[in-house]
Length: 207
Image 1 (cartoon, rainbow, N blue to C red):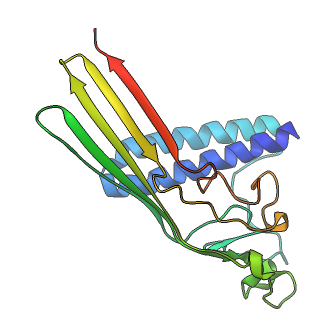
Image 2: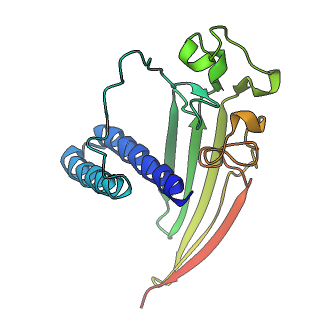
């Protein structure tokens, strides 16, 4: 069981690394990002070899007769964690001359469908798209975060804010399409905000 959990963690590391590689195309920091991604992939491969000495490369060709499938825009028993075709974070902020700052962030996830609704028989399992109505689709979700900051007497930095400001609930479905360890509580908390609005506050003192 512990081995399976660690494998899931390693897969998540690869996903985050892939997202950073894509983000670097927008920021222009390609060289530094490439070095970081290479290091991360090498670390994951080293650990995979420790867990299974038979691991040679991360991506193996599929055996003859085994079909592949595309999980973009799907979730469920086969694709597991939702993979929205589009997701983004848009953040903007402003700091006044008196030290007061305001920033906001918009997190967006496009809609995804149950993988059994795919026309691909490798996903729907029966050759015909099908799904229980309550498990058919997760609608698009937007989360809005707000943060306020203040610098006082050139020494104190105060921060208060709220993530998921409007307390948007996560999409839910039956346990049969939110299998462990990918889903829990009838949703996917690693993708959607499962705990609702989160308030925070903090202070930093410069000596």
